[in-house]
Image 1 (cartoon, rainbow, N blue to C red):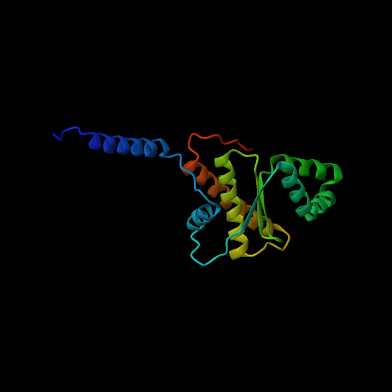
Image 2 (cartoon, rainbow, N blue to C red):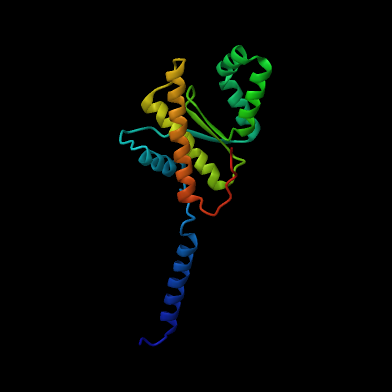
Length: 180
């Protein structure tokens, strides 16, 4: 057995401190940057082509709702024509209540709610990065009708799956507000 010298004691104490820090963080780590989250999403989506980094802005709820409303004029007009103005306004209200992030294909900017808990904010960012890649590599959905609606639904399912995978891998035991 090795004699307990002051130098050996300090070395062991440092080693134990480092181990304690590593063990405390096990399963709780976050991706530390937008770049690492983007790479994580690209890996999940099996994207091997080169891509540019998306522009990301973290915004308050009021700004997110303003941006969502401005980008949804086409949908609002269609809902009004199909269901009447009262139903269209109610539907828009539901979307505005639940909006926590969005990708604007016109500006290619991702907006994420700064009001979300840290890990949920990152998970929502992963969701919106998935939409960014869908747009970059799959193009915009410009046509109307059943095929376009099916493609939009497929893209939303893929992005939601990536968000849940992120939460499961990085947010275990952390505050994540449930969305309907």
